[in-house]
Image (cartoon, rainbow over the protein chains, first blue to last red):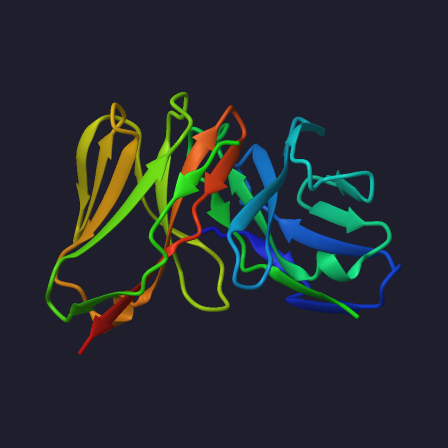
Length: 114
Length: 110
């Protein structure tokens, strides 16, 4: 059964450093998402991406964040200058169509900012 | 601010019993509703989705939707210890995003 994959599983970085989180969505899916979950808190929407552009973004997704689909398979989230409060699990998700249809989540990347 | 509310629990049920999980949402425009299961330290796993008022059954799981009351529920029949997890309710907001509740922690006692 196809699944969303994410790398790395755990990333430790120092405050102010740039990180890139990588995702490979399910191959026939057209819509891609990033969510984050701070430890003990709810899953929060960051951004959705379709047809090589951002469809919607949340207030969390400020100028420090960017997304890209550099090739036909990868989908990346870049945080330009990490802050302590960026420490969280970051989940990539994909769906065949827009959010009326089911989103399937990857295993997540645990980002720790020290 | 559009919200999805869930009782955080824990909800404890004996093995073999029915577990009933509830969720309310504030956005009357929401069209699609999802239940995810999340084990500790893992990602959300989709277990049910429902788009129309009424009941939808899949194996031991039944999702119930009442749009007039802005209420979604999940019933788990014949609960097993392996069902012990946090159950997340997610609701579509606009076209592209989900809003998640904080989740209900379910404990099935052997």
